[in-house]
Image (cartoon, rainbow, N blue to C red; front, side, top):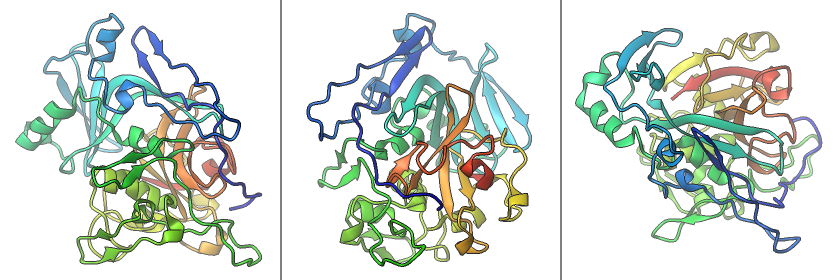
Amino acid sequence: MAGKKKTRPVLSGLVVLGLVATSGYLTVELRKQEEAAGVPEIANVGVLDGSDRADGAAKAGGKGRDKGAGSWSRLENPARSVLRGSDGQVRAVFTDGARTATLAGPARTFAEPSSTSSKVSTTDWVRLMPEPWKKGADKQKWFKDWFAQYEASKEDDLLAIAFQYVAGAKQKKDQQGTVYAGDANFGPLNTSGAEGGDLRLEQSDFYDYLGVPYPFRDGVTGQPETMRARSVDCSGYMRMVFGYRARYPLMSSDNSGDGLPRTANGMARSDQGADILPLTGVSAKDRPTGIDQLQPGDLVFFKLDTRTAQRLDHVGMVLGYDTEGHLLFVSSREEVNGPTIGDVGGVSRLDGNGYYAKTLRSAKRL
């Protein structure tokens, strides 16, 4: 990627993750800095770590969310089913061929003040269904059971999971003591000294971050490299969020097994999910003309590096609209050494004519 490479900045305060109720914002105070060189934690606020099971609207003193049977309708481009409450408000959106579903819930604010002044406030909660959606699935038992479990759930969704790897995010460990979340790097420094070489090495997958072998369904076992500990490149980050954490099937490579491929190029060209912005080519003239169809949780694919020929070389996930109306995405980048919605190396906006907006080539809803 063009531009001077920078190492990952250290936060000077907490990233604020606010819960917005219907009557206004619920915020947390910034923790005072203990030491100049200290690394602060990121505190989840209730709904972001599943500890607050109360309904946001009820806590605000307002009416609870409409729990009626609701009404279903069909929309096109992309083909999808929309569930509305008796008040006419959208409660959920399900896209044909995709397992990711968007459910309405209490609003949250995602911010990364070390790298950007942008903040994304959203009422969208993006979750993974056990089967791809198709017209009429609302009448099937698997969906009814799933929707009953997650309609009002405050457990971590894909957006909350993604933000558990940005700068300063506190570590989380499973029962075996494996760190499965926390501030992630992009990859180790490139010490080859080659002119024009990248600052940091790619090819750090989710199992490198975990530091434990991972058996794929095709019989291949991913072996972590010590030098890549706590690291995920752009596609490794998406595989961590969607695959290891949300349990979307994972391929061991771009060519073996079924599920989410290893690389950004493999993901973009696979038959998984629904193509929201179909890939037509990798040149500047192939940039999508409109992004209105995108929604939080969608994978977005970019052509950044001429050295990769016809391959797409970067992937991120749509997070939502910031408070200024710009559509932001989160991805793992070498400029800041890890996952970010920041402005270092290019503003994280999909609209306009910034670095990433101009290099966007396609989008997929898994």
